[in-house]
Image (cartoon, rainbow, N blue to C red; front, top):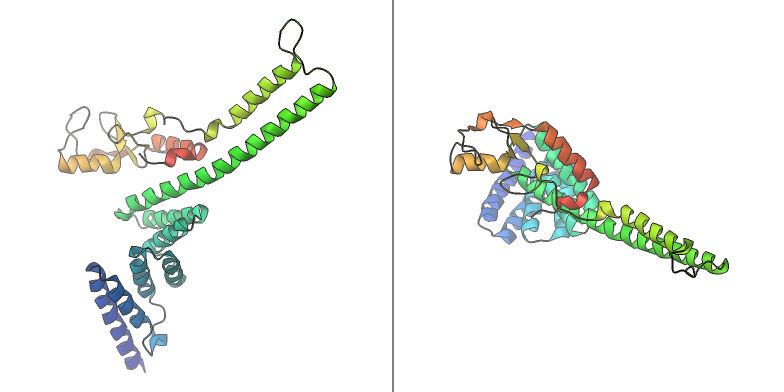
Length: 283
């Protein structure tokens, strides 16, 4: 029986490999057929825990933008193996397309945590961060619009209540000398209070010290050089590899091993983003 099981598993693996070849050639329909057959061989019960079959088919649906099918397949893959970095990434993308940004954020963050725990420098980290930033911005945009609408409704209700109160007490009109009365002062103060309450939801320029001098974007992984300048790690490393081993601003000699994480700036960025989620929007 074991030999038979090994034979079924081998056939399924061959179909998976064939599907991978089709996927690389952008023959997505053929790849889906290969992965599907690999899952539906008569004796598939002998190897039901092969998460990669589900994930590979999900990748095909991802390329075809068939988001419902991506979610269906990748959830099955993650049920079999919850450590799939690409699995959480794909699920996050599918959820983001459904405008479920809060749930998408959780999946992208799981993917980044898995990469970090594995001490991986996987190229996917940048891609995941990009979609995570998009999800966080969209989540802020959605809730910001709702907050602003509620604030405006509350402001109008307060203004109406003040107007009614001063009308009933006969203090609605300005003083005879033209000076502001209690009603106008209260309306002015009310406006100031509500303006102050919306500051956190009002996009402004991100402070320069939180942005890379090369990309002008907010830091994600800041590193400091011997000259005391801070750059985005990926951008600076690319400069060192493609342009030369020198600091792009000071022109002093610089090697990759000399870069040190700037933890203080990283913590400052995280604190800033926590209070100003609109800053996740990329240039």
